[in-house]
Image (tube, rainbow over all chains, first blue to last red; front, side):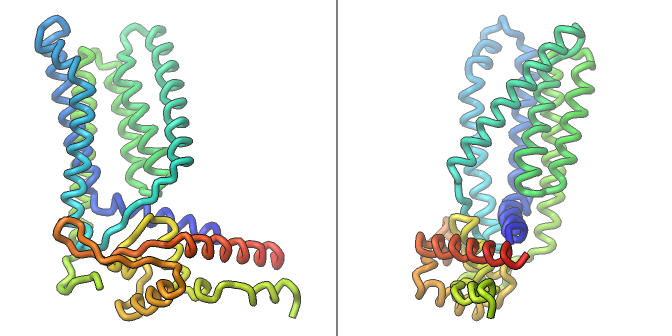
Length: 212
Length: 102
C-alpha cells in the first residue's frame, strides 16, 4: 500500500517534468548567467560597469526567477494543460523547511571542503567546482530522488564532471563560470527540447474538450 | 470469520472501490487536479470518471469547481478535509489489516 502510494506520488511529481518546459527555461537562465559572468570578467572588478554588474546580481537573479516562473506558467497553460491536464502541487511546509535546511547544510559542507581543497592546490578554481557540485546535488537529490526522473542523474553526473574539468582548466574565474553555465544551459535546452518533442508526439491536442 | 477479516467490514467502501481509491490517492498527493489529468492518470472514460467524482462529491470527500487558467476552462477537483480524513483512516485500516494477516 505504501509503495503504491509512493509510486503515485512520484508519478504526480514527475508530471511537472514530462514536457521539458521547465528545463528549457532553466537552460535559458543558465545562458544568461553565462553571459553575466563572462561580461563581469571582461569588464573587470575595477570598472564602473563591472561594479554595477556585481551590485545588481541579486536583483537580476530575483527578476530572472520571477520571469522564468511566469514564462513556464504561460507555456504550460498553452502547451501542457490542454493536452494532459492541469495539476496544482501541494506544498508541505514541514518537508519543505526540512529540505531547505538539508540543502543549506550540504551546500555549506561542500563549500567548506572545496575551499580546503582549493587552498591545498593553488591552480584549482574552487568556485566552478563548488557550482558543479551544487548543481549536481540539486539535480541528483532534490529533483532525481523526489520525482524519479532518470535523466536528472545524467545531468547531475555531467555537472560534476564539467565542474571538475573546468576547475583545473586554468581559465580566468569569470570565463570558467561562464563556460560552465553556458555548457550546462545547452545541456538543459537540449534535454528539455528532446523531452518536449517526445511529449508533443505522444500527446496530440485532443480534438474535443477534455474537461467536463 | 476471523477477527482479522471482520476488520474489512469497517472499511470505507466509497474509497475502497479501485477507481475511486486511485482518484482519492492522486488528489491526496496534489493540492488539486483537473478532470483531464484525473481521466488520464486513472485511465477512465469521461462518463466513468464523472460518475465516480459525483459519488465522492455527494459524500463530501471531493469539491469540484469550474474555473479558468488564463483562457483555458478547467474543471478542478480537490480533496476536502473530510475526504482527507477518510483517506487517512482508510489507509490506517488497510495497513493494520495487512500487518495482522502478514
